[in-house]
Length: 291
Length: 158
Image (tube, rainbow over the protein chains, first blue to last red):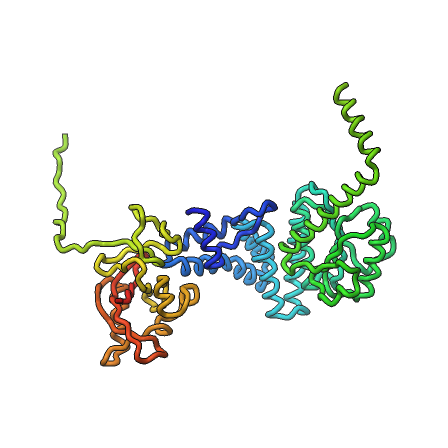
């Protein structure tokens, strides 16, 4: 099948729905392609095959919802394993874990015991996935201001998903609660962030503003962004604060771009401010190489 | 040494009908044989097989319907004719788009013809149909079997 055919299907049917690499290349998941290949053998049209393929992909979500609704942790882990066999970690989280959790919340309420059970399991799963993330290899460092209520806040899961995606992309990430301002300057100074994300809408605007002011007073004018926080909150923040997409995957790409742009700008300003020192360093390096 | 043994085979059927391949979207035959699964002309339809006399001409309007009487596919010309896209029509009952317009008013005749085609019992039958919410519009359709998988093909006569 030619790439043009897949692109034509994406335009006409909205499927497959590839993610993009940093170089803007389309990235298809094995699950999407395998589901479509099987459906093409059984369907009478591309539309019906796409419909079947979509149903096949939602089977993992149904399986996870069923496991969590039955309070079966092992089966929930197995459902995520099955999802990971066909998708990347990012897509498994966005297409299976988060939708399943929202369905549990919608069914029982976000203050119910089944929700608490589901949220604790999902939080644990995301933490385990974070421990398997590769060592930082990107220049950008991202400071996340946690403005969620607690671990049972529905937005906390999306925030942890964003944290996981940034870690897996090779960035350094540090989440800190926005209510903790004492000693914040020391931590920020040591961490050296290139972008700040305020995630969640539970904390009050003045609490967030105080935290953001402390961060900026130590680290300078950093790019700031809001994740899952109302757009009205931007009024209380410094000008230039932007809202990230609600999807953790899209938000990750946006915040990494912010951090890397800031990192490159700071690097260029440093060279411009100390050109003599930079040329001396290069000359010393040349001497070392010739010796 | 074993003697060559004879095997009884059926005689070639002189009345056997010719089969034809066509794209489920553009109606054109595939460029190459054996036929690929996806049309290598437009890339938007699966290649299906039907009796050569029933198979649509390139650019013709036609539908494919399964034995549950739901629409499974629709050519580009049928989309224009019925004012609906294939994406919206698929998995919906055929009766939302076409009903029998026989003089006798027998809705069962259309259903019977489609079910006969999906089982392979009937081929090349003709029916008169109309959109359910329009009067004065009639279409003549030829109904037969197509696949794979086995389904009914409704070709609108020009």
